[in-house]
Image 1 (cartoon, rainbow over the protein chains, first blue to last red):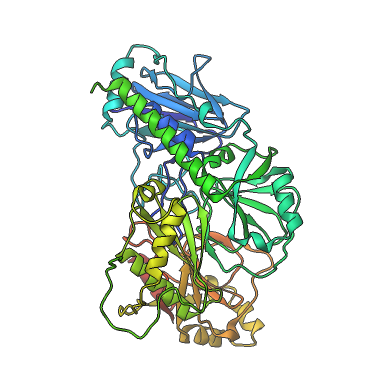
Image 2: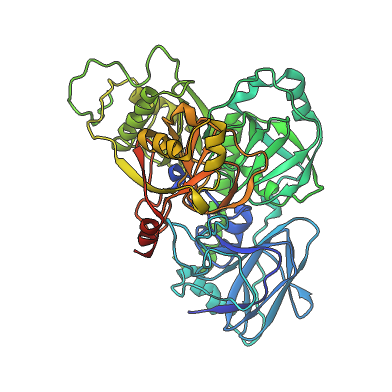
Length: 334
Length: 255
């Protein structure tokens, strides 16, 4: 079933994103994709989509759009609440809206980014095997740019079987949603400002006191923070070995230390290579927490081993695949 | 025994992971690891990394996603779930992938007999397209014609692509052209601009801010999402520059 929305107010920065562009890294094309991959995937799962389908990434709130047709949507994230008729809509749950309604995003002080999915996924052309927007080079997503007032976005009308069943259950002349929802909270750690990290290859380049500072002090997210990376304010790190790192591959989550000892967490749109020594990388399960950090937020780093980080990754993947199975079993009779 | 698809071309060479440099493998994230082959930029290291990369793609392990060659390293991305489900040796993904790469690295090295791609990049030097040629000539006590002459007579090797999509890190510039970066970077450098920064020369594939001394501009698209290989250049390519006039530049862009 084909579905359509039009943007009334785009908000601060709204782009189409998916799970990233991995096959052109050697040509220096960044990964991009949703900053908060967890929220992106949950928004997709809630409407029966595959995780890799495109969602809209909204930054903070102050956005609104109109359903031009009947739509089956879901949202997840901490940047905004979806509001209809002055009522906050439940997150991580399929939401059916009839054609003609207007929906708004209002501020959620918790975080920064919110993902809006539609049954079938947002339909934009694939560029280098991904629908993610990379603004610096102006490709991917919706015409290579951020969404603007008046843009009309379509879904891909070939829905997955589960999406069709969810739609059949909810289709109605008014707002409708089921009584189940995905519990995002149960997937996230309680302490959202403690970021688990694995120490990096150049760790021995840093002075011992600096490594202790890194693991015990509080760091504050600086205003110079965007989809490429976050600068952190806090105790500057001192190098023991002052040699230069020859440019080598980096990836989202890597924490670089600049010449002045400042920490930078690389995020989704980061360059593919870098020449600053790296002190650690954020465990991939905690990258979604980083995606919701805003200037002024305080964080601490806690060290885990490479093996623990992998176990956490695998545990997260198992939990996510259980969610998919549970939703399918609910709608598809075997 | 591993049965790698080796070309049975007999060589006197040792293994890819040479004994004179202890190859270091380290985790970059839960989905990637980096193999460090050396610590100094050399053409020999470039061909070693290029050849090992080709060997890996002829003999991929289950879950291999992509690889990124750099000056001294090859970074390998993989899908942890597929790697874990494979029968590679080791308990964790990092162990499984690194044990596989080590075995691959211990096989005898085979020189690729495919000749490097050679590109001649047309550049319109000086004038409005390369306003900083004046700075470069003054800093090196050369005439503008000599700058062009020296820039076009060298042969350059592409070491890696990084910084922005399609940006080639090249070696081989005539040392007498070396010029420091600008103290204050330009807010906008047009796509195709050819610049010098210290001992490096490079081409800006996209319009970005930058601090390099711009000496000319190429009409070629260094990065084009509509090509099968969007980046015109890749690691290992050989590049030279050819001076063209303003009319020829315009003829290219109208094509």
